[in-house]
Length: 329
Ligand code: GZL
Image 1 (cartoon, rainbow, N blue to C red):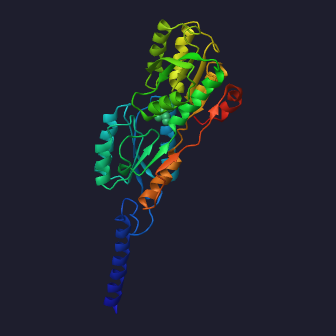
Image 2: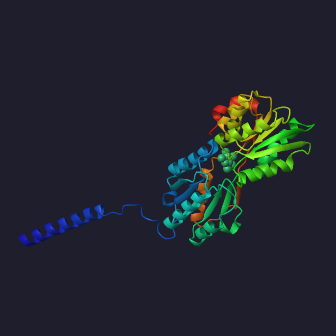
C-alpha cells in the first residue's frame, strides 16, 4: 500500500510540473491565425515609408497613420525619407526583406517606382499608393487613395476667374517638381484658368516654408506687387506662409494681392483670418483609417476599389474664424 501511495504522489507532482513547464514555455508572440481563419489587425504588419516631414499637411498625415496603428492594434513600420525617393525605395526594400503583410506608399514623385513595385509584387506583398500618384502600371499596385489633385487646381483657377473677370497677371509657387500633387494642381489650374489671366512666372518652393521664402523674395525683385502681378496661386499652405514673410518684408499688405492656397491647414486658416489668403482649397491628409481598412481587406484576399478619391471642398475667410478651432490639422 505504501508503495502505491508514493507512486501516486510522484505521478501528481510530475503532472503539476509539466503543466508549469507548459506555462513557462508558452509562445512569446500571439499565435498565428489557424489556416483559413480571417486575419485581424493584430496579425497585420504595414510598412509606411513616409516621404518626409516637409509640411504641416505631412505631419498630420504621419500622425493619422501612427494613431490608427495604435488604435487598431496593427504593427506599423514607419520611416521618414526626407523627401528623397532613394530613401523611400530603400525603406520599401527593407520591408520586403522583412516580409511585411502590406506596403502603403506615399510617393514623393510620380516616376521611378516600377522596379521596387515589381519586387514587392514578386514577393507577394500588396502595395497601396497613398496621397500622390505614381506613373507605374496599375498592375504593380492594388489601389490608390488620395485627393484629385487636378480638381484641386481647377478649384483654385475658378477662384481667380471669379475675382478677375476682366483678366489679370499672376504668379505660381508650385510644389515638389515631378510630384503628383504639383503636376496635377498645375495641370488642373491651367486647364480651367480663363484665357485673360496670365501666369507670368512659376517657380517651385518644394512644398516647404523655408524654400518658398527666397523664391518669393526673387519674384518681388523681378515684379512689382499689384502693378506687374495681382495674384498668386500657391500649391500648399506652408509655402504660402513662407511667401507671406517675404511679402510683409517688401511692404505688401494683406489684401493687396489675391492669393489662393491649397491644403486647408490651421496655418492656412490663420492666413485667411489675417487677410492674406482669399481661399484655401482643401486637401485631406487624414488617410490612416481608410488605408488600414483597405489593407486588412487585401491581406484577407478581399477585393478593394482601385481608386479612392477623398471628398474635399474650398474654404473662405468668412468661415475661417469659426472653423479654425474645429480643424484636425
Ligand atoms: C498633397 C500632398 C502635398 C500637400 C503638401 O496631397 O502630397 O504634400 O499639399 C505636402 O502640403 O507637403
